[in-house]
Length: 98
Image 1 (cartoon, rainbow, N blue to C red):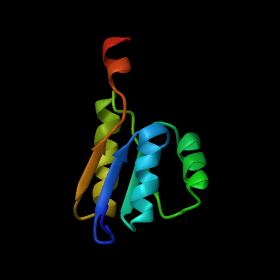
Image 2 (image 1 turned 120 degrees about the vertical axis):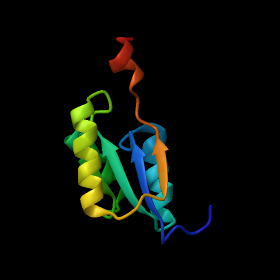
Image 3 (image 1 turned 90 degrees about the vertical axis):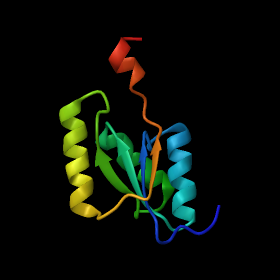
Image 4 (image 1 turned 30 degrees about the horizontal axis):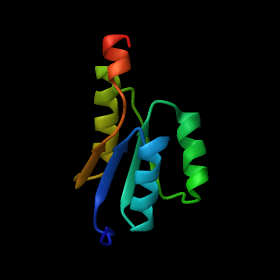
């Protein structure tokens, strides 16, 4: 992966699994990484595990349209653009009750 120092990135579900590993790699490449997740506590723990306080937490519940709107508004107050979106967060469980 090339250097990403000029890129703004948002990773949904960035506090665990593939999302967490994606954020980790993005930070190693100097991207400005926004970690979107439902739980503040889990996101803070993930950022501490990353040992990189530059990850930016955005709270969002992907199954809640009000939460999505609030997260988008929060992002737009912090950034003028979004270069890369890793849409990794799970919504199927909430939408279909599985």
